[in-house]
Amino acid sequence: MPDLWTKNKEIEFFTESQKFATPEQLFYLGDDSRYYAYWPKSYGGKKTTLQSRNALIGNFTEKYSVDLLQGFANSQNLYAVQSVICKEIGLSAQSPADVALCKSKKREQTVSDIKAIFEVKMSIVWNWELKDNRLICLGDFRTHKGNPGLLRSDTMLKAIGKSINIRVSGYDASRIPIVILGNTPITESYISKVDHLYNAGIIQGFWSLNPFPLDNNGGNLKSTHKNGFIRMDSYSEFENNLRRLFSEELEFFSSMKSKKDLGQVIEIANKESTFEKKAEKFLSLIRI
Image (cartoon, rainbow, N blue to C red; front, side, top):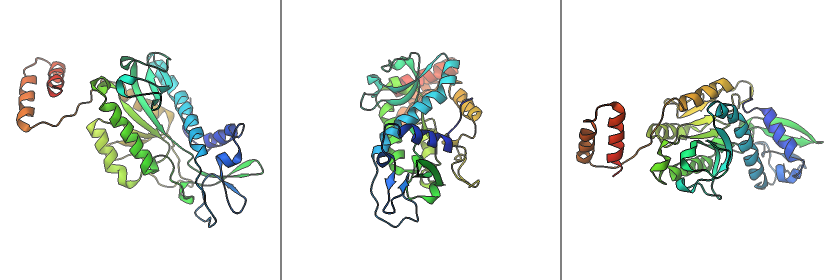
């Protein structure tokens, strides 16, 4: 059974990356000649900004997500594919889907072959020091000055923006669920926002794959009131949420109509004989 995000995954990232990246590309070098993954809150020296690690951790976490999703994908006769392109729904080579569950292994997909999209917004969570070629954990994200993963406002806005871009690209994307995968909690200011995005159908969930992001059993958010955000505490919980996502065909819709026009649409749709036909008629009319 695959592992969710842990400290060991971060050690694996640094170990693999050091085979082709220098310490200065992976760590901040302090005035005290120490290598830090993040600036400790106690650090008072000169600070620089580290950008070179972003692409490396991005690729690592996307591959990790592909591996994590592959077993479930196989159970659905699908494939987990990285960097998926589909011009029909605004997924270009410059801005592909991080990971998608698809009917084929190809990178370039038709919209009908994409069954789910996962945007991966993970980063290094704990602080690490590289000392004598060994990694020493200095503490969880409460001990450093960085805001990792979903705790960053710009990360949340990018995830929301990408999802909206897919949704507004056309009605072809209306049946594709979109999930944001992270490895941290969210900030309090985003609790109501993620629930609203979930209820509105724009995003089908912000899921953290890190069961224990805080040391010493520190308390952190398990889920928001309406489950727009959920912390997965085991692989089986993750798989159960995937199965729920695939349990029935979903349909995204949105509109801005007068009450009179909306009432007419409802009245016409209500004349159909089954719930499914009523829904189909409603969706066809609301999209005119």
